Length: 393
Ligand SMILES: *Cc1c(COP(=O)(O)O)cnc(C)c1O
Image (cartoon, rainbow, N blue to C red; front, side, top):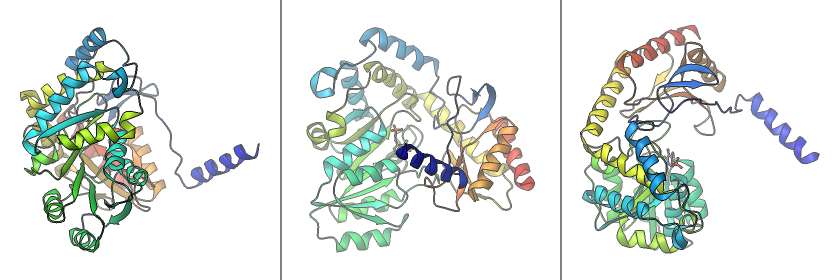
């Protein structure tokens, strides 16, 4: 069939450019010690930054939630799927984020991808100019398209360029959209300056804190706490499948914004509500994040980040300047990055090679992620292996 042979040709072209992706099968829970495709490996690739994904208290809470609420929600939130567990989670998240938002409300989503589609499609529109950071996550790019706003991409962390664009905009509604922690680089957006610009130009600032929530800030409130921000202009998106260790996402903002999302966000309205048991487990997760154990885990993670920086001795490859749990090593060409990942794998380390289009061409990289579940000698072993492999390649 012609349609299939066309796809076969396209797939061969991916092979030719070392761009074909393979899914690995994990046969154990998400911890640094995984069994993947039958083999024991030390993993540096999950976004389980606090090591909560297989925490006994969360597993227990998930069981308890299933017992109390059943397996599925049965319908969308506006029909009959909105359970007590969802209400309790939203109230908890609104209270948790309230130091940083005026009249805080929160709404939960099945995934961060959908939350981003929801925010941008509900707040944007043909009467909106949407200013999107160059390195934004794919879900924000797709949300911007779905919103039918006029989209302007501003260069990475370039405040002067953004200010000019805002100044030049005649559009009534303005939306500035950014990742807080850039997912393939690990650096932080200049949120205080972005917020000041947004307040001056009467624009919303949409912050995607997928890699900050639970990890950044004294109490794990993420990038807003890290930078001590508070403003009615903020629309905050945090994910719950990364540091929070379960699944889903939430938006926290002024309660009027939240009410608008309930009324108008199609990725919220036209989908079955997530299983209430997940919301129940997430209540336990927020307790850990906010409590003493969360603080300890964040402190341990910070010490591992420092340790990796101190132990890497790279001459050709570029260890990016990141203060977060995302610690990329840029290698350049796709084949070289794949070879480095394969060598690491031979040594029992699981580190993914990230290639275009996820990152710009010629910047293929190893994306090392650290977790509070790693031990310090494991990070040491990874650094030594990287130092050695760089010389070999
Ligand atoms: C992971 C991620 C998302 C999507 O969140 P999911 O809950 O995995 O759908 C959105 N934005 C960024 C920056 C992410 O890294």
